[in-house]
Amino acid sequence: MRLFPTRLNDREATFSQAVLEPMSARGGLYAPKELPVFSREEQRDMSALSYAHLAKRVIKKLEIDIDDAVIELALESYALFDDPNDPAPLKEIGNDLFVCELWHGPTRSFKDMALCPFGRLLGEIAAKRDERLLILTATSGDTGPAALKSFSGADNIDVVCLYPHGKTSRVQELQMISQKAPNLKVIAIEGDFDDAQNALKKLLSSERFKGALKRRKIRVSAANSINFGRILFQIIYHVRSALALGEPIDIIIPSGNFGNALGAFYARKMGFPIGTIVVSSNSNNVLTDLIMSGRYDLRERHLVKTTSPAMDILKSSNVERVIFDLFGCERANEIFTSLENERFFALSEEELSVMQGIFEAAWSSEEMVDKALFESAKNGYIIDPHTATCIRSAWLGNSKKKVICSTAEWTKFAPTLQRALNLGAGGDEDALKRISAEFNAPVNGSITALFEREYANVPPIRAEEIEEKIVDFIALRDR
Ligand SMILES: *Cc1c(COP(=O)(O)O)cnc(C)c1O
View (cartoon, rainbow, N blue to C red):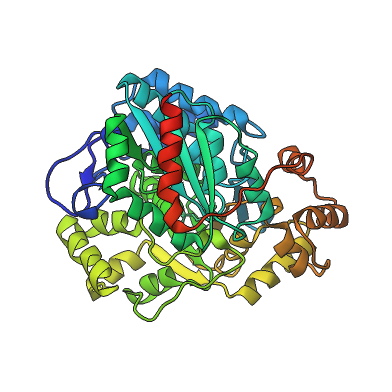
């Protein structure tokens, strides 16, 4: 597979190059132009395969520059899931309405689906090239724990994870600060997710920081979904859903950075029976606007804090890969330069109708999310606030069978549920107990274990102090 910069018509990269250096020239990303299509016969053969075998078949056909043995090793990380043979189980919750539960991994969010295998894959790529990597992540709550877990103890990879103090759930915070491997550094900062993200961007252009890395021959990479290596593993479960249900499906996806939806887009492009991809948003509904009107307008917008924080995003990075795929790199360059400079772009009518042939969209207000949480629990199935945004969008699309992607286990957002279910108000621990007792819902052992020990809290630092902290950490690791 060859990957191309989304904003420039040259310099293709191999898969492993793009994984090590995920940003391309002019601020673009790497994406494929073409993907292999699976015939009906091939698909029939594949429908009985186990998850790992299915993944291997799909990845093999993509012809990436990674040895089979390494791909197998990466896929073995699904052993960390509740059921290694079925890491993303499908449940029918209504007539022809299914949920694909993507949160059975070690940190209980869909981030594990890709970060578990991706961590091993990246470790192997770095080792083979004898490179030392520093992964910098800013997290609103789910990427941090999954990345820390995945890279914990890795030989040639260090991870620095920045999170906004007090802005994640206590479960998410504990998942981060309880990680103790020496190659991991967790930093709480004063401010919100955007402040954390901006601090990282500033760091990457600091001469002092770049000098410190260069002296030590360390390369910086990213573990968020701008990295194509993550997208690779986010194609597979959509393929599995489409094959398992035996007829075309619509997929409803709670979206933020659009990496999950991009995986579905690629699965569809590879010929698997996926009808409409329904993009679901919370009150930060830029993606709904884009798909309904063709306009992406940040000029009057401010980020709104919601109960589904992983979707509190205004600049949705992976939209760029879809625009590149459908309209080419020149147009992508035009559009995303305009978004950066004018905070706005508009698709032509023709382009919009191409988009609408693939995507539909809807959003849920905070009230609708609360209502969906309540109704769903009453019907005996507890969902989290991100998944809850999909309840209202599930009637969109034209296929008979619908699959909602459930992106987190409710246990990560228990206080929000406690309130929505009218069970009082308390901290995470109290909320977990109350909901578990009321609905006879089990709490995963990895979550209860978080409350069984005391952890020294990470005192938050100011943005100006981040660089020094990270430089110190790198120096310490070098000894
Ligand atoms: C990351 C995340 C999302 C958003 O996924 P994208 O691929 O960024 O669109 C939705 N829900 C949860 C729980 C998440 O952790």
